[in-house]
Structures are given as C-alpha cells and as structure tokens.
Image (cartoon, rainbow, N blue to C red; front, side, top):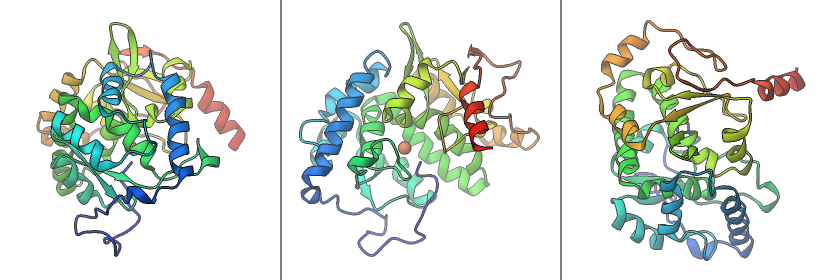
Length: 290
Ligand SMILES: [Fe+2]
C-alpha cells in the first residue's frame, strides 16, 4: 500500500513533502478505543505467529498504552533504535514522494483510524495498519536498512519504468512476507500482522501456496488487493532479504523483459515449495462471484 495515490499535488494543509501534523490531541475517545480493541485482538493472535523482530519491536515502542500512538513520542524511541521516523500524510501519496521518504528513513503513515463498526474492512491504510503493522519491524536494524534500500530502488525503478515489478517485491515482503525460523514459519508482513483473519489464514490455511523467496520469481508474480493472497513467499532471514535488495536490479529488469508473468496460483519447477496450496479458498470465492 502506498504504491498508488489519490491526490496529484499536496492538499492545502500539507507541506511540500506531503507531510501533515498528526494532531494527536484531536483523536476522540472512540478513536482510541478502536486502536485498543484492534491491538488487544492482535496481541492474542500474534504470539507464536509473528516473528521475534516484530514482537520485540512492539514491546520496544510500547504501542498500546494510551490508544492511538503520539508519533512524536513514538519517534523518540524509534529514532534512537534505527534512525527511522514516522511522518503523518493525508492519505496515499505519489510514488516518488513515498520512495523519497523511505530512502531518507521516514515512514509515511495515515493518521485517520477506521470506524468501530469497520474493524475488518479497510479500503485505504489507516493508522492502525501503518503504525501497528509497519513500525515494529522498523526497530530491527536489518529490516530498517531493507526499507531504505527499497525506497532507493523505487526511485531508480521509476526512472526505468519498472514500478510494477518492484511493487510486487513490496507486496510480497513488506506487506505479506513470511519468514522461516527454527520454530516454523512466522509472519513479518504488515498487511498480515494488522489483520486477525489473515494472521491465521497465511500460516494455517491449506489454500495458499507458500514458496521460498526468490527475487525474480516474486517480481514475476501478480498479487491480489481484494482478498487473502493465493501465494506467500518465505524468506530464510531478514539479512537474506536485505542482501537480495542491495544488488543492482538493472540486469534483473532486463531479464524480466523476456519473461512472462507466472499465474498467481501456479508453482514452477524451480520453486522451493513449503506448501502446495489447494487454492480451495480462492476457488470458492470466485465461484460465489460468478
Ligand atoms: Fe502497508
């Protein structure tokens, strides 16, 4: 998320870099209640499912106390750990603005929070998704470097017309990534850890394929924005993810010219298969829609 945008120029309240004041004092009691409800739900689901780096980050940032976090106070802790800061933005921002923030270790976050009657339904990323989902991982030094490298790669990809390939990397790692650990598969993707249903589905449902991470494979795989993923990619470690991203993508982009996309539900002979999914969930949903 953050790879598409609604506005074409900063709205009146925003600075040239699209940031706005969070205005923490303006959150209502209901807003804070919604945060606490969502937080407590995830706090029950994530132990034993989220990776250690995420759970450690949540602890280090002390994100649940008073409801919606005050970015200023949170940023003191985050900046001391990895030099990252969270900045508030009015909604989805243009790609070059988004990448430029990441390249300078600033994470753009929405400041609004979903309504109490819409806990599971979200069209645009809100402060719970952006902060609870993304910021704990930014306390990990290796992941912090990965996000900066991604921003720098994004700026290059814009110039090369390769954004659709790079967006898939973001989607299948930052948003929906899984990690292999000695204790089993664990979640590190923000789109998963901020969703109760997908936290369970991504690890335990027999439907989706779970495939070993390969940069080129990921860039050839479309994704869905409307429902649970049909494929999840599993990294061996955060260091391996960072190492793959520090390579120059120029040669890779050139190869992609000659290669077709891989269908969203397919496995290839080269895949390291953790789970051969039944795809039953996606098939049933498609059946209902037809
Ligand atoms: Fe996100």
